[in-house]
Image 1 (cartoon, helix red, strand yellow):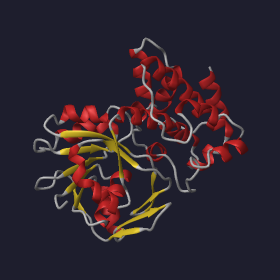
Image 2 (cartoon, helix red, strand yellow; image 1 turned 60 degrees about the vertical axis):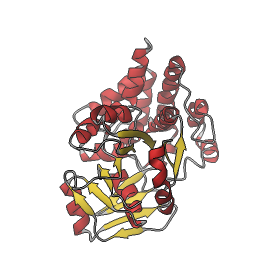
Image 3 (cartoon, one colour; image 1 turned 90 degrees about the vertical axis):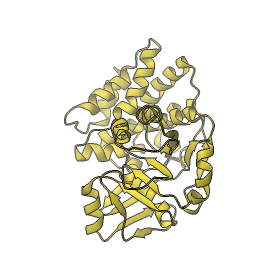
Image 4 (tube, rainbow, N blue to C red; image 1 turned 135 degrees about the vertical axis):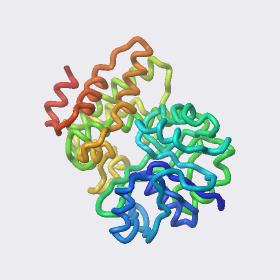
Length: 328
């Protein structure tokens, strides 16, 4: 495809996916903050490294702080969940423009479609972690395949994503995939509060018990709502809390795939918390809480995490203290 790609929200995911597409020969335009543009320029360009593959260096990026001139062939929506509606409202997209949401949570495609009714908004899912590890340097610290809603609008782009070593796995039911990813992402607020890298946090039984408590509650809510999350791991979703509660030596052996992350990997929520930025807790625990309320249920563990991560200056917690509060 020769039509340009706009990356709306040039943060960790936007820079990594857009950068890899640009390295594969695509005409990619990044829309993001001047702060990151200046950082990348001062670093001599964008450096992308990968747990599983070669590094990519891009000396110059086509960067914009607002919509670039021209018409995009594809828009990758990578802004934080709280900015979905406002980001798209500023773009005058032609009718039918495909917009692929590569965001956390389950509601962003719907919100984006409401903000840009003339566009063709498609749900997507990013399974891997990307961390900002140095000036101009972003690193993918875990594995997984991009997922997207099956739609004819994406067919012309599949070969490009293949060339970029980011193949798109298409699904008819993206809701089941998104809820499955959200279950896994319930570890994000636990990781953020721990202050630890992801691998170190997952190898701590007390921190895993906190995540297990959140997963178990969320699974109860999903069952009440008649939602069956897709299977994204070797184990069925319903087994994940039990896996997280295993003694660490057994967990390490059975969760080898989950632990295929390097020492640099951490959750994006941990990055946001460390930088004093608003987190996406409302798109994760908040989504489970809203679903519970719609079913006439309570979800006190999700509510606690929303309260903790929405505080003006959340502080790292002791694992035992958080575990006790979740039990209560």
